[in-house]
Length: 446
Image (cartoon, rainbow, N blue to C red; front, side):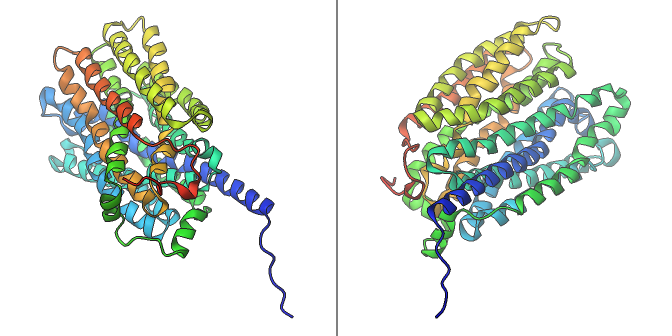
């Protein structure tokens, strides 16, 4: 007689699912925080320092060039989405997320070593742009992969809550990327501009090692393993998407346009507030740090609410509130004074932690829920990264709209139109919060 291993009980499977969901959420938070710390310290440096270091001969256009280096990363993000999405849907989420993190860490560390324009001339901004492109290639796979993995590990009724920790990690990365520059303001200006600004980039070597150790402990989601076992893996996910899910891709791309609010606040207003409104750099950095820190705490709450009442009502409400608060915040920033910034703080926190977080908390679950498992990573990654192209160039576009007359109303109008498109696309998309995970994307295919 041969003994047979007893199948796992329901209680055992449930406990394993809870453990995997927790591990995925923790890894998603930590990995995304460290990945986007790397990604956004470049944006902070571009808003404050890179003009004088890498574009000193560009005159008034130097700041525009500096902000544009932020946007070039968003050019390679769709390419990264295609690459990492293809590999993630073919070989699995875990190993792809490890590779993504390693690429970001190496590129960021090297940014901290790039000589200035005064040292090697035009090669300095060229090397800087190449490394920024590498960061974009990495970022194209991070949040989509982490969101898909967390959503697939989570219980059906808590998918948004567990997935939101990826976005909490991204937001916490923004907190770190701003906060790390605050103590550097105590340095003498010469020290800050020569070596002080490089410290946050060099620290990425440490945070990369920590994130890699956390990510190695992950398991592949059961729904993806079943897809491989049942031979449902497609040869070329992007072709499958274009053939069977074109409408879904268009809608998810449109919904992702609201993310431009992120770079509008964290990069453009950082530059605008210091150079135009005269608010001290350390106060603007502190404002961005505090607003995003409050958002870190708010994101899981909004996501939990969407697990109860649905994705669409909260997403659409968030876009409406953003349109209102964008005008109010930018007006307060443009008309305030360095001695009276209370309205900037209040309206900015309401915008970042309230309205923006309401939509930001939901999309890590809502977007991948639109696609079936065999193209989920690719579908979310490609659609999201195409939409994020706008976010990447928002600081440069906003600076161009603002111009020499500091036209805050034009920037607010441009931003509100982008956010309104997101709300309209959400209204046209499927509600998914009650659909079982294994059935997502399989009904009413576009």
